[in-house]
Image (cartoon, rainbow, N blue to C red; front, side, top):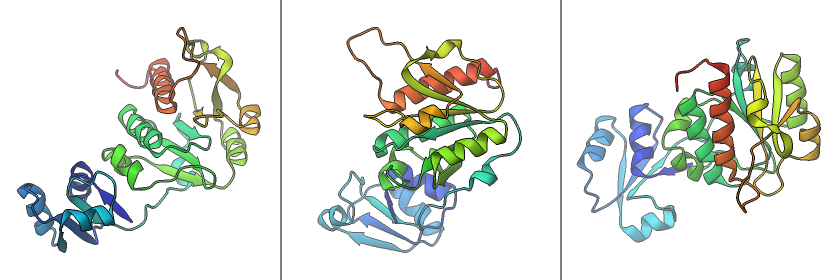
Length: 235
């Protein structure tokens, strides 16, 4: 797996990730980055821009790292028995949304993120770059069946709060205790079965001509409303 970008590389070095090899632009000026790679005895291959672009067509900023495939957490390991806050993503497709949600979850102190194994975005180089290092401090579980997972979480004492334009005003919902916030697909929202298995449905009011919010924006609003309502973190 290839990850890219200076901030991603610096975070990988800081957290002592298993970097198998570094590919650098032959005229890169970042001496600190080079020194850190050399300190950790990571093999460096110097490439021209054309070869780097072929290796990684995204905005790599002159640095690409080869690392092992991302390792997900298990749902069982994420559940501690305390009053936790999880975010469940119902088949999101945009890696930029996913990366932004990871960043918000880590900043807010969310305990874990749950995604499906199929028909949705997984952790990829774009997600890692957009998260700007937050992914290294966030528990993420990938599950086979979202509805079955929701039922398992309910058995563990969690309340499931979905998001939909037809729900209750998001500020009128009680977020105390064990909570799972569900963020729907960018275009379709929550699937029917996921929606039917929510205990509550929250609505973020729209006052302009726009009839929906970007998934990562909606997630940010719901996450910080939950944190404030729970009173478990200083804002």
